[in-house]
Image (tube, rainbow, N blue to C red):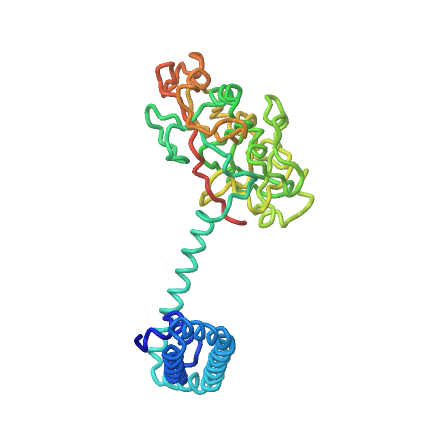
Length: 371
């Protein structure tokens, strides 16, 4: 029997791993010598059993000693670092003071790098990573025939914008949505005048009465718009953004219930939107006022977009019914989404029975920035 076979390989490996480097060589040599002598006297099997007994009795103390040595080494290195740190900092400051131009370039480079990285991460966090500030954001879908949401293309055959009559038809004939809201495709300027003050410009948007209910967004103060506010002949009301309430109305509690003149039409501010809500999509100029669609003829009498069946100026967004099977809308929606001939007549983009039906696509308004 060879000397190497007297000690099992696993025993040699475990003892070598547990023993300190300074004593590893002579410890394994002593074990090999004793195991060889026992193998010659009692046989190889007895020598192997003896090796395993030696491993069982010594592996614990050896491992504890090895760990203690490593901890002591780490502590020594740590203390040495803190002892030398003041000297290293003083040396670095003296060298940088001797080269002010180089120091200035280093500081500017670090500032630009840290600032740009922070800005990019903040943008990615707000737009891509942060959850929508609404309940169950994955249930929000936009109706349209493409994913280029929020762009007023006006292309022939496009099914991303809808007239008011067609929106009402879709709202009443799509049971797969618990709520289907409409909102103006772009923000418009409003002249808002308070009592005894000059008119001020505010960005605003016409929305349906179930706009806030579709998103599941409650009011920070007062209430949000209701379907009754969007009924024909209803008194004009408005919901103000939290940012406008803070910056333009000085967070006055009396702003809720105040009557202001919007484009010369008296309207009551019924509520304040929550701080994190900026609207239905990311915009450089988010709306400060949300006004029911029914008030559009009063505040813009020259336009009267609601009464124009051939004018498509509304986006639609809905909350998908949880009981409905999530699917892309296809031929099963044809009879329910194709508008009647009286709605399609006169449209610059006719929606006839031969036209492809709109399909539901995930909303592009994936993130709203924090106020």
